[in-house]
Length: 378
Image (tube, rainbow, N blue to C red; front, side):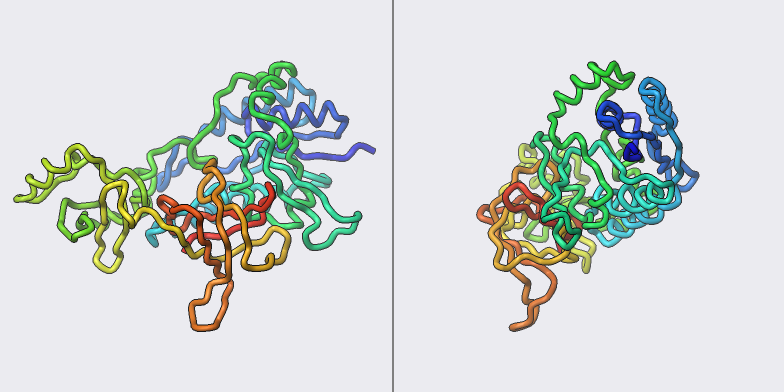
């Protein structure tokens, strides 16, 4: 009997090719369009779910497979958007795509796939799941490895998944490059072969982040200062700024009276967000070469290990602080916040200083092209 596979079809070229490949390989394939978001009076984005669903329907019809529509809007707004707004309110910079994978795509979606009788769920992620061992399902059986296409590799976004989730997951595109996927889409004559890449917040769309956040987070104005504490202007709220972000050329800062001399001296140099002082509600800005913007050591909390157990420390490894960042040489060790007391936080020491290691963002750990796991920067 053919293995029953549910393919999460977004209407994009990647998931369309996944469905086509699995049909070609002889699986019993059903497509599923997952509705995650629709605008409300309270919060709105630029979601194109109706168009996306139409594209998924066109592909399913072309492949002669059924397509079902499942609604996870409630779960998405609670577990992903709720997390995102809460983190920004704390002044941190979250990554909603990581949480979406953990709680929605491989949480609620996967649970529904099992409930409907599917043996596995396939998605268009660029990653590899490798099964190790001698056929026995035990801790560390499944390994998350980087995709063949280094530029498209999405293991960064998948590092919070666990062994049970990987046991029911397929990533058919891990062996291919994006160029090869485009070529296959044309070979299969898929209606989405030439569709552009989707960007922006997962399922919400391309929206100016500051405007999106201000729908739920109130403005709390405060001073913009340089590293010496000189007031340069006023910000709208620390939640709306990210460490390392190019803040403003000085020509865009409303300087107080008497500070025009500073403007003239700094007109040619862009300024970047260096720090957020919550006790005084101050946004610290400065130039690119500031020591505040470059760190050789960070603390990472809420560590998740894909294998189900921690490796031996100290651990020589590679680390990525953001999607598509080249892997960085590093060493991980357990943090000691009190003399002689180790805890579940990690200290990551880098060979080279890292720009804009931002609280709330994820630090993801690799060894020999395998993603071991990661956690949030404290």
